[in-house]
Length: 396
Image (cartoon, rainbow, N blue to C red; front, top):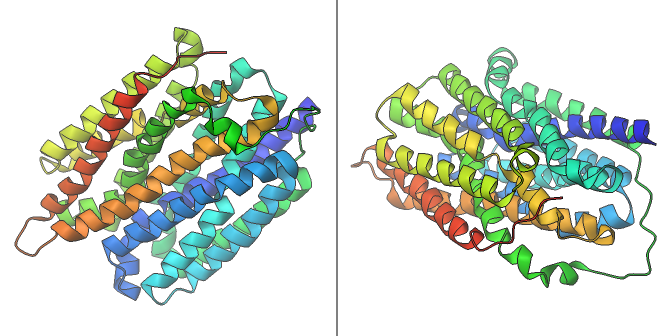
């Protein structure tokens, strides 16, 4: 059984590579999409937000499906129909709203991937190893974040953005088929206890964690997923290759941060203060970006990489919340946390798109509009930290 579960985690990690790719690739495609179909930075931010919002809204049915149908059927069906089909729609886009529709479909398709892996870990391995294994999968899967940076830039230069996305769509369909063949469902929980999402929502401890989950991933995901491309293009006049370099740097920092966060709860004997300290440093770096974002190309790239590194606390936040969940509600529990984490990014992408549009004028330097976006990240992260400081620390 353990070998089967390890094979399951391997294929789910490959699927998660795709999920990371899809949440980040718009930053590199911003320029060609603007040239070919007239998509603006604000429209692409909204489209990215639709991916995250749809992904988040799917967490409730995905949680039910994981507890009821298991990860094999849930993951294979959604990945094929949503992500594979959505990528083909994206490749055929001729209007900006086509991109929004495609990103919505892709968000549905990717919604179960990471939670399926976390469900397998929670049900099949020791609880004390959850944060480390969850971080490992997130870190390895974040190779897709790198693939959506400089490698995608090269592929688009050679084949064009449409054919490049068609190839990604075919890879997605192949991974979905492998999920159906290889993934094994953990044994069902045999219990007389009944429960629902409402039982989780009655837990006071969770409500002191969820606000930080809502805002902590938004700065790094928002910057890496979209804003970094237009930011460097407008503020520094960066080329597509230079944008690819910066997005790769930020992706590598996010992966490094994920691996560093993973074992710290066991090494230091606390989850709460690891999470609080890391996100506080990330918030301070956001504020530094707000103050000095136009100081220089590489100093700004370093600040964004730092935000990516310290913003990679999601796996240990999931572990903190997961420590309060009963086994028979594990699927619903981890997807509830994911709903807030990914939903927060979706909300923030749409909010920052509106803030950006409200501030941008021809009479102002571009940095003014981008600073308004950064300030939203700073303020919301600070509020999340203030609430989180009252949370209950718990380790397994």
